[in-house]
Length: 126
Ligand code: HEM
Image (tube, rainbow, N blue to C red):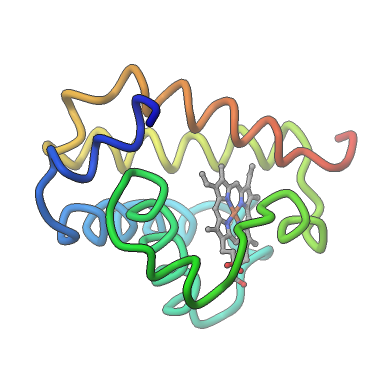
């Protein structure tokens, strides 16, 4: 158990995770850096990110049942991710978190997690 895996229980349902992901992808749609990396239809990407976050924060295991071991770094290899992409991703996520009340009590842990994770996804120099 780590600090993240108790968040689902405290948030209490999946709905705020889906709302967070909608806000996040609004940011992706507005980003000239991020938008070209994602497929035209974002519905699968939304569902995968919501399920992953629910799983990582101690909720349903659906992500792993459907997609197998997360292998996140390997799954991001097809996309060119440098500092610029990392910063744009974090900006979209921070703005989504700002808009989703339910995550306010966990901001310190969440900010640290996303920053660490997004830096780990960097696979190319800018
Ligand atoms: C650092 C900048 C990042 C960029 C530019 C990026 C970009 C992408 C792209 C383009 C996809 C493919 C979407 C699709 O085709 O459906 C993807 C998938 C995904 N990303 Fe990221 N990502 C980043 C960081 C992160 C972080 C920090 C997380 C989680 C904390 C994350 C979680 C995911 C998940 C769960 C998937 C779906 C993987 C799968 O099951 O196929 N990403 N990402």
